[in-house]
Image (cartoon, rainbow, N blue to C red):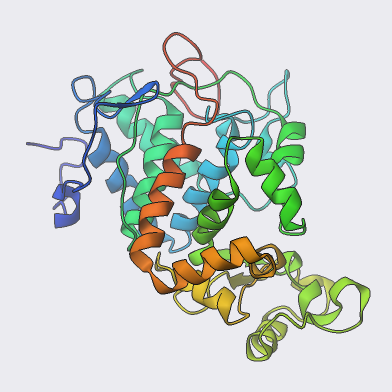
Length: 330
């Protein structure tokens, strides 16, 4: 089968590897075979787009995964996080959790451009984002999962909704759990989806209080490993100019999607206070221990939680639209 979008490409073997997971016909309102006839090369196009982006930017896998999470948590999975500001609304890109932080918009837009050349006005931006998040995990060493397709793009976005609905690393576990519950996700999903922090980076301001003055005590957070704290203090010195410096969420296997995140929590090496807080609750701590010991269990449960995430508040059928460009409505 030819792949005319990339005429000079020698396709790596990974692009030809089928997913071994069983693919039932449908999940809810979505269909695993939705584009089989209308855009048969879709999965290959998306995988190549993510792979090419990852070659140029090792952080992009985590950014794409985070982008899907931030999209689905604000009024459902409708591609709203991709929209630029208009005269009618302030988009989510400028909300506090996304400002100077959310990344990967150009990757989705580039993939969309290739998809439009192959299958004009067939594939939604939100389906591309959902597939890209799956490919980001797979290309980082994680286990892929079947993705139901057929979502349609929304018409609007809300900066205020993003500020209100997205969890913050400064919030207590109870608040974060409540925001998950508002989207039909439970405590197990909190623990499982937090495992996405096995890849990616965080800006110093999100955890610097743990290094120098934890909760006004004038001392570091006692739940942070001392050797890790020393390294982080070098990366994030106690000056304002260091707030945007970056540190890996998982300093052991920075770019590999695995279960080391949970091992870090057991060893008091969780970077964010909201991550380490999972060890302070008996129910979540028990799950952390399980995932730290059984990587296959984490892979299975992460796949299940990602399917749940991808089905939050979706638009299908005649609702929404298929955007031509992901940053603007048609």
